[in-house]
Length: 478
Ligand code: SAH
Ligand code: SF4
Ligand code: F3S
Image 1 (cartoon, rainbow, N blue to C red):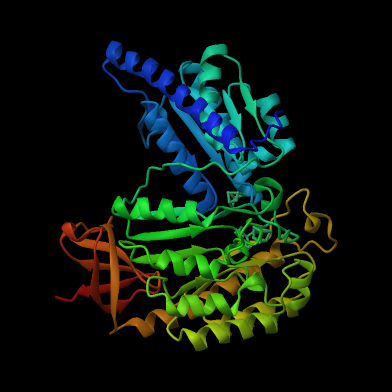
Image 2 (image 1 turned 90 degrees about the horizontal axis):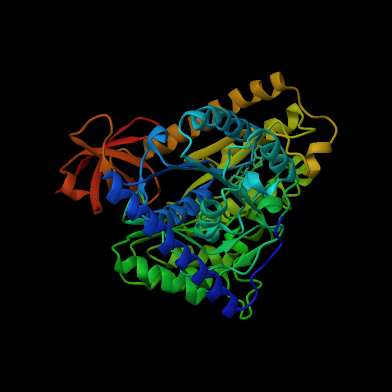
């Protein structure tokens, strides 16, 4: 396995040049194929996991389209199939093996199809061993640190016919100048940092995404200015822990300072970010959120558990009280803010009392959305070897009780919106009813309302008429 890292600006440019050359060569091959057959080659991408992975897939899509491939949603008609994997929980991994098994059979019939896999799962040795042994029909395997190399890896595979494994053990320098293909043209994700240093005891991310590293503010601002010129109105700033942005830069910059700079960019109307770790959320950030008109009054603030004992075992480095105090402070400065969260049920050693503390936090905070997870043991993490792993039936019963509390909180919040006027960024025609449009409010609630499709991409005032708990029905204000 390769352990190369790129360390200087000259090497950075050289690496990117190599990719440009590979893109040109593959494009020529694909153009010839189109001339001969009258058909364009197609690619299919399956993306699992979080928004980081989704954004990586947007970058990979751009590279594939530059190489002359056309996107398809139908896996069976693709000439190039790419799985961008996640390993945060075990069931995500099982799904990938299942699909690779199916592809194996499919490739026996269609020998020309190329299969590539990448993403977080590939950064684990056990996974690579299993792929080498069981899934010999895979053509290209790469990890999370070198997605920019896709063109080069594809070309080497075409030239040699060998399966290419290119997994780096460590992160290299940050690669700049990436373009991406977005599903919604006026909404874009922007990486501000990569990796994570927190090592929450249950979590695999620091092992598969490497140490924390921040992009330079000028690179981020340039990218966003470019996006604004392309007509992007809403941006989502991505990092595993955005609150520690900029600490290791040559000239340190805080996340709050970065937000204030982005807020000045013309054309951008909404700024969102994720994820905020409660332990690093500064007053300075709360004030920046309060002061910057474009920063949405919505905050994803994962609590994970309401029990201080469990939080300590999770290595989250805050207590239940500290979390609740933080929420109070945020609500005081930004009274109309809505909060969302992530919660894990069934962490090793979680007692009924611990779980009741989690319910208490849910009831006290009142989240507008909560992503709830059953604890999944990840080999290599400290929690995997903790005693007192919780039996499935206990976890499932707690999980159901948690959902009841979460849903009743969501319902109460949605109810408060009925009668208010919300600015909605219209995203698409409603999938169930073509006379309706679908969009999101500043505070991230989903709204359906009757309207003309030329409103797509605009921010329009909508009066909220009905609360359907997980979405709202509104009427356009004229
Ligand atoms: N960096 C983000 C989270 C990234 S992972 C943060 O710290 O908030 C997204 C969510 O997956 C986590 O917040 C956690 O709730 C959940 N998660 C992570 N590891 C898990 C595991 N082993 N089992 C169950 N859920 C897990
Ligand atoms: Fe995982 Fe914790 Fe890092 Fe989030 S902050 S990615 S949960 S280790
Ligand atoms: Fe994201 Fe899954 Fe990787 S949640 S960072 S894609 S392990």
